[in-house]
Length: 404
Image (tube, rainbow, N blue to C red; front, side):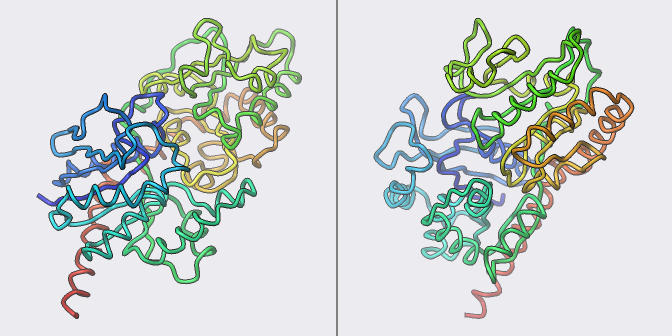
């Protein structure tokens, strides 16, 4: 059986829903590992051991496991602080794991990529890297520049044997950022089988859906401003709601379904009765949320892919998405959803009105979204593509070593 070593230092694939360590990368790593298992691979995922309540080694699937290392810190470490733990993290790995037992190392995010570069230097193992997000994309979207991250990403993107990106937009951004990057292959992200189109259930009030972190860069405040504008253009009898999934349990009041954050409360002042915050939701709950919605809104400032957009389309929900990053590829304008400019609440409110007012357009987008998702975001198909990528770098490395 072929063995792959995943490194996802800040993204434990088995992190509990709604925990500080949970996020899109965790889900991607878990789903890809399980899909590769069906192709005959055994996958070990190395991550940070952030709690003594979890075992160091934990199995999932039949040939996948998580291996955790504390690097001296048995507690949650924000990813922007993980950099200083990397030397000790790598030392613990090196003293525990026999790297030569693996066929390929696949790193996830720039911090893990730094560890991958150390393994490559030490062992010569084929090295594949997936960004999940890029510092240059964040800089363009927010103006926030992280010099260390940008420098490290340049090293990773020129040193790895293969870069796997999730969209054409990400590939173009890398080529704009670096003159001679490593070979790049586009393999989108798949969606879990929980996200399938089912017959929508009757809802008392029509609603728009949002799922994601309650952070400024996810466009949550743009959405709330847009929804307020949307309501002002509706008749007094209109009862359309906005339902928001995401954030940790501690962020949301379980009784009122309103946020504890003062900033969020101020943002919905005057129309809080039309907005419902659900807190963290599992996949079945999210699928139900998407399926019964008018549309799902993804107003992010930047996204390397846009997992929520893919999942929503698989459920038959048209997506109103910011025209940024991977969202431009994941959502097809006027085919599976609508594009809007980021940070533009007026344009977003108009898009919401357009879908609520035009049932013919909305139903057409729903049907095309389902077909598109089935074609593009099937994990079994994507695992075959990833397997071919692994075989390619393995063969290339053997040729190079033979030449030496």
